[in-house]
Length: 218
Length: 218
Image (tube, rainbow over all chains, first blue to last red; front, side, top):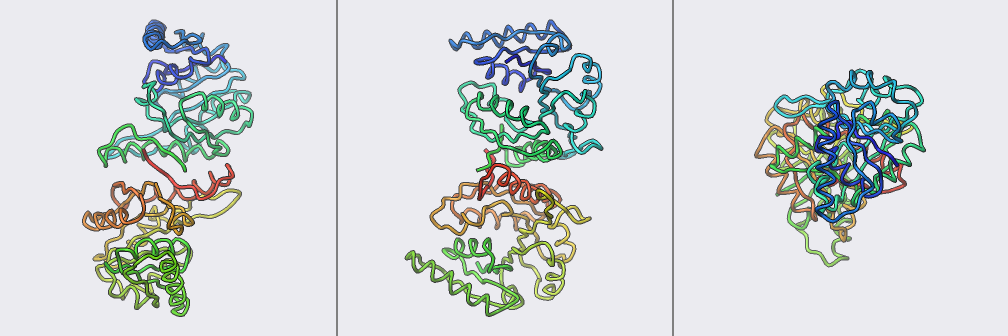
């Protein structure tokens, strides 16, 4: 499967690229193609250093990266995502789009600040063509552990979306990453619940002097 | 420590009574004193059957139970809690009050329906005398596992409140129950986050055909 990662040069993007490239073709996307190429080369180097065979990590501009991907991951900050996706709309037809986007702001602690649609995932769905299948997942996997290929990643991943086949694909992709365990989270209307867990986890980490906090539903 | 449990005849109340009675004096409270006495006797019997020594579980009316307790646990459904506490206000002076209350309603799935104050804990704080220290905790510990004394209860308990000493006491009480691990959750204003996890966990259980789901932040 060809997976394009918007925000692929960020730490979550890196982790997903490293983990998925064992079984999938990964395209690291960035507004700045040079940066994407450099990141892809660096990730491939990390895998070689560990003696791991991969299906290929390449770097690309956003437009060219998402054009013929089956899955497009949106791993960018909330601010600017609307503008970014409006620009990329002509290149999105029937892909599965996985949103990791969390609208939040920092006061003393972090606070979830959803748009009027109720969640970032719903706002993203409204922007993109109806034929694109938006799925919400991976907001709460700690980035540093995702990048550390020796970490077992024993966490739950709640998956929300309106298209059952798309969710099925994302569940399979989730099982391809460490011990991540996919959980059905209902329709995209429930995405606010997993999005709002992100500032909550960050706050718990700050308040308890912990780091890289994830969540397990058991 | 003397702990009074409002709603002590319910399943969460039973679990807390069974678990705490190893180290604390527990008072099972109910509007119906007969029912409270019967439950207390039943719980004591369960502990004897397992050969466990306990510090005493007694049954009492709500008013008499909470009067001289150090800690009062509110483990009753949201509907009616305001009326209940308005009636009990004369008996609450400077106790620590632990709210497990979750305002929610069921449509197809469960939905968190906080009052205008933002959470049940904040609403409860507004009703009670200022000298009472309200702490929010234990919403997400699965009742059946809490009642099963052989279950290790390997879960996180996020604790919110405005009084640091009261939170410290509740953290100690949390460590007295199985492997429950207390986490600082900030002020009572953050309680909505742990309250809203309850319907989310119930929904996850329904959608994934699981039962007795709890949460671990790791």
